[in-house]
Image 1 (cartoon, helix red, strand yellow):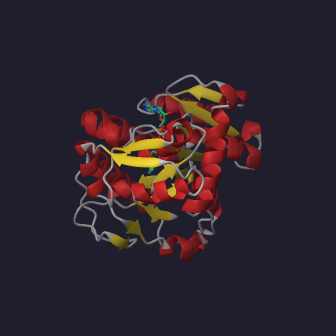
Image 2 (cartoon, protein in one colour):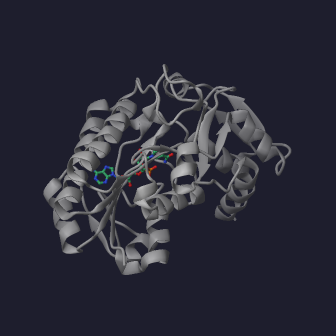
Length: 314
Ligand code: NAD
């Protein structure tokens, strides 16, 4: 039976991943950790406060619970990283190398997500291939490319079973996103319910890849359980479900709330990041090597998001 340590367990992904892993593998098999104290459902199972930049703290918790897998999610996201690049390097690279070292020392299976932020302005924008030019212009992107390479290195050099995906912008209704460039795609649903209107900080016509959280969680579980003999790539599999611009979300929302209005007040800071990312990435390597398949398109996701978010305001 797997025993999994999750870092950054209180974030947008971790708060849902821990619940899902506990359903599959058992409550006591999944140890949540974060730099903050847990409350709510995450606190109902094993949880420890761990700062990932403190290698000995992370090691002690991994050792104490005798885990066989580490899912490393703790990070500073794209917009926040651009506000504080030095802190981003410290957390994103310092935390990652600590987690990889522990995976090496304790012989753990390892997962960490990269991002569409690992691409840059010179990357082909449409059907972005799995293996292509990666010269990102943001600190977050620099961290993510370095993380992909470092994870590959630990596999080739030390035989650590490292695996990872390049996530697109993730959309969910449980925990609000933590300061990324695609956060608007979550906020738009909350504002649709509250005000029937939304002012987008990302310009019309700006296409980015997106995915609904249930597909994102299934991808982790499927990749971690995939037959290693089928994996030609290891880390940073392109995965996407939806390529959309703000007006596509508006059209999908208007099918349920016809009076919904979208206008724009572009944030040049976030727009610059968005413009450096692809319009749509090619997920065929993930499909070939571990059968990745997204199940939510924008309409199916929108129906569920509006229903779930509306329950929060009754
Ligand atoms: P988030 O910002 O919602 O959560 C990150 C968590 O890490 C927070 O709970 C925070 O308290 C914790 N944390 C921060 N510094 C820490 C430290 N020093 N020690 C321990 N914990 C610390 O992020 P998320 O959206 O859940 O993202 C998780 C991972 O997925 C990150 O690597 C991120 O780059 C990647 N990713 C996310 C998205 C997305 O749309 N959410 C897209 C692509 C990639």
